Image 1 (cartoon, rainbow, N blue to C red):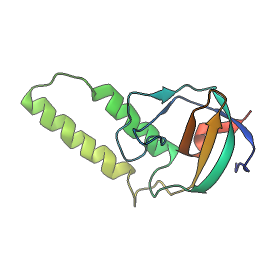
Image 2: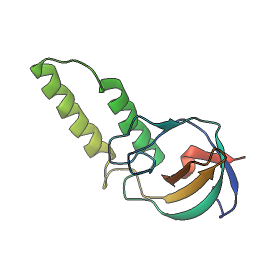
Image 3: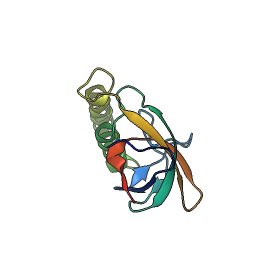
Length: 124
């Protein structure tokens, strides 16, 4: 479903945020996430970066969340790094994830998030 500028939307899931204020895409998500259910207004829309749809974002964010902060020996560290590269390759440009529309949303709490895909939003 496409959203027009000015449409009221609600997050369908928790969305990790990168350091540059975008929904987590190819970069590693930062320590901040916006909670599902948060309501806001669409203030802009444009093509999303190649390979950064909600499914790919969720997969990469989930992987990073599960391994972040783990104390691993050198073998396990190499194994996790190999897995990370495989996750990125499987969800990056040229994979089955096609680029879509990225939305900029101003939430009621004042936070503005750019790059949200349609799978993260529902009409409010």
